[in-house]
Amino acid sequence: MTNALDHLMPPQMKHDGFYRAILKVVATPGVRTILEIGASSGQGSTEALVTGALRNPGGYPVICSIEVSKVRMGSFVDTWKGYPFVRGVNTSSVPGSSFPTEADVTRFYHSVRSKLRNVRLEKVLGWLRQDLEYLAQHPDLDRHGIRQIKAETGITVFDAVLIDGSEFTGRVEMDEVYGAGFLMLDDTRSFKNWDNFVMLAKDPAYRLVKKSRWTRNGWAIFERRNRTMLTA
Image 1 (cartoon, rainbow, N blue to C red):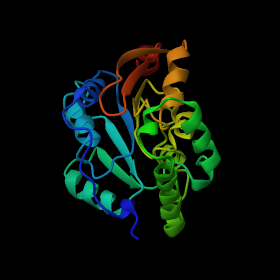
Image 2 (cartoon, rainbow, N blue to C red; image 1 turned 90 degrees about the vertical axis):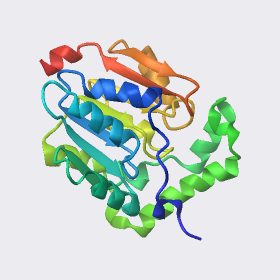
Image 3 (cartoon, helix red, strand yellow; image 1 turned 60 degrees about the horizontal axis):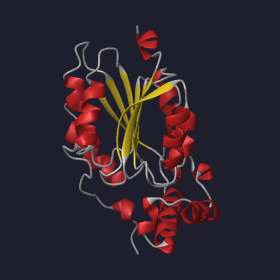
């Protein structure tokens, strides 16, 4: 049985409200460094990021895009090879050891009335096993990808971060990118970013810019309140 990560998938985010909101964030003056977690083949959220970058009055921001699937990263590179400010990185954002356990996911499934309940628990756990199996099959990808990008670029805090990778890594990814000027969350009503949304909504350091409960599994954008001071 082949792993779904060995196949391309059509873009889920295309000219919807989140796409347009991402574009606006990236076109904001002062946004110079962007991290995209979950680029897929580069024709959904990456397109929004690049379109926004091309409209940024300060010049093109640097976009670092993480995608764990080798085949999808291959398509990504072909799509954006003519844009030198876009860098695709074929890696896991965090190592497999940072993924939740099946017990963690099961506990969330039963205790939180999220949209994850629209899918059978066994199928959800199958997604988790599939992600971990892919990393086991490709040990060169099983690493702290976010930390690697920070080390290679010298960027300690990104101006904008999109968290839209694996269903199961949003919580630990937030630990790696907290402090960014903008935090853009997809799937706020599933396991991926449920806790991140709840945390940021209560965080006095951030303000909610825009959200939707109804587009796919929900999305939200938060801005750090002293962002202009950080990027001035």
